[in-house]
Image (cartoon, one colour):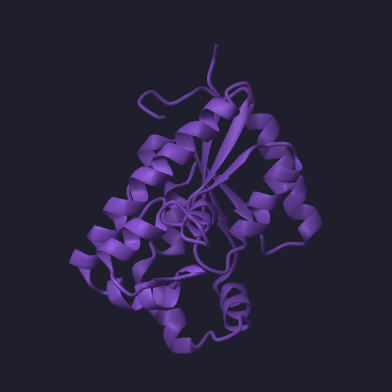
Amino acid sequence: MTRPLIIGLTGSIGMGKSTVAAMFEAAGVPVFDADAEVRAMQGPGGELVAAIEHAFPGTTDESGVSREMLGALVFGNAVQLARLESIVHPAVAQKRQAFMIEHSGAPVVVFDIPLLFEKGGAAAVDRVVVVSASAEKQRQRVLARPGMTEEKFTQILAIQTPDSEKRERADHVIDTGTSLAETEDAVRMLIEELKSAPRRQGSL
C-alpha cells in the first residue's frame, strides 16, 4: 500500500503556521504537531519528566517541566541543549512513527515542524510548505503577543532561517497576508494538488 505523502509545514515566528496547520486539520488532513507532543510529554505525569529531572535537577515539579527554568539552562548553551535533545528527539520520533502507523491509509499527512530547515528535517519529507507573510505583518503579529519585546523578537529571528530563504527552498508557499478565507482556499487547493504528487525517495 502506498504510504501517505508527507508535508513538512514550517514558517518563521508570526507567519501563521499554527493557523494554517489547523486549516489542514479542519480539511481532514492528519497533522503531527511536534511541539504539542513535547509539551504533553513534559507536562504533569509526562513520560519525559523523570529523565529531564535526572539530567537537569530542579527543573521539574508536580506540574511537570518548568519550561522557563529549563530554557534558562539550555538557551545559548550548546552542550546542555544537545543533552536535552538527546532525551526529547528519540521520544518525538517514536510518537511520529506511531502517528504514521495510525494514519497509514491517509493520502496526505502534515508534520508541523517550526525548525524544519534549521534542524535539517527537509530531507525527511516529500514536500515542504512554507507559511509566509510580509515582514511588516509578521512584526505586528509578534509584538502584539503578551511579554514580547523588540529585543526578544530580534533574538528569535537571529536563530531562524530568514523567511526569504525559506520561500526559495519551499516546494509551496502559503500566503497568510491575505484574508482567512483566501488562505483557507489556498490550503484546500494545495491539498487537492498534493493528493496525486509523487513521494520523495529517502523520506520517512
